[in-house]
Length: 102
Length: 247
Image (cartoon, rainbow over all chains, first blue to last red; front, side, top):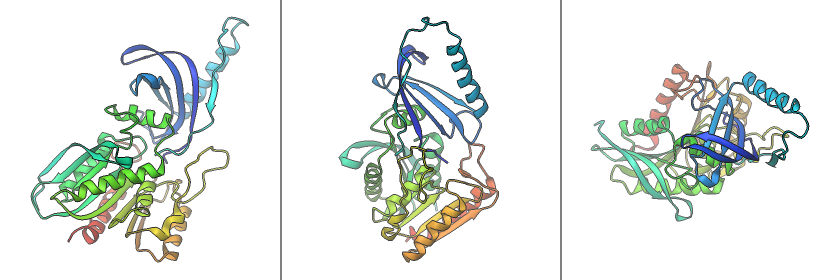
C-alpha cells in the first residue's frame, strides 16, 4: 500500500546534499514504496529545508530492522552523553501526522 | 493501426486554472480514439509512470499524466517532488479532481482523441481514479489496487484520508478494478465491500483479483511485480478500453 501516514518534525541541524551542506529545518518519517532500495516497502526518512526548494533534501530508505537499529543507536548515543554536553533543545513534534496525501 | 507516437512534456490548466506540468503521449496517425488520464502513484510523476503513458499511446490511446506535485516542486526530480508534496500534507482531493478535469479537457482538444476520456490510477492513484470518476463525466475508469476507496484507516494511525466508497452512486462510467489477492490495502474484504456498493448503486463494473499477486503487481521496476497478473491485467485493460473508448 501507499501509506498515508507521515510523521513530520521540525529540527535543527545540517545535512549534506547534492549541493553540499545546508541547514536542516524539517523531517518526514513514513513507510512507503522505496525509490531505490529493492523492497516492496521501506521506512523512509526525508531531512529537508523546504525554504531552499525540493532538492534541499537528504533521503534514506531502510528495512525495518535497520531502521529500528538506527533509532536505538541514536537514542543510546544521546543517553550516553554527559549532562550539559548537548545543550540544544530536543526536536519538537510539529504534527503527529499529515495524512491526506496523494 | 500505426504504432507511431509523439511523447513530450506539456502544460495544461489544472485545478483553479493553475498551469501544471503533464506528460503527454499520443499516437500519430490512425483513427482518433478515446484518451486516458494516467494518475501517478504516491512516489510521484516518475519514469515508470511516463512509460505507462507511452504504452497507451502505442495502443492507439492518447494519454496524459498530470504532475500532481507541479505546484509544490516544479521542475524537481520526481522523488524530491514527492517528498516535498508529502511534507506539505499531500494532494487534497478537490485539487486532484480539478487537475484530472484539466487533463481530460486537454485530451479532448487533441486530434488523436475522439472526445471520450478514461482515467487509470495506481496505488493512491487507484483511489483517485475512482474519486475522479465519481466527480467528473467520464467514459471509463480503472482502479488498480487503490487503497482506502473502502475502509477506515486504523485507529490511532493519524491518517486523515477518508474512504470514498460512499460516492459510488455518483460513478459516471463503467469501472474496471484490478486487485491482488495477497494485497492488504485494499484487502479482498474491501474489494468485496466496493463491489457490494456498486451493485447496490446499479453501476457497471468489472473486477479481477489475481492470485499470487499483492500490491503494485504492475510495477515492473519493483519487487512486487508479478508478470502473470500484470499481463492478464493489461489484457483486461485493452478489452475494457476497446469497448468503452474506441468508436
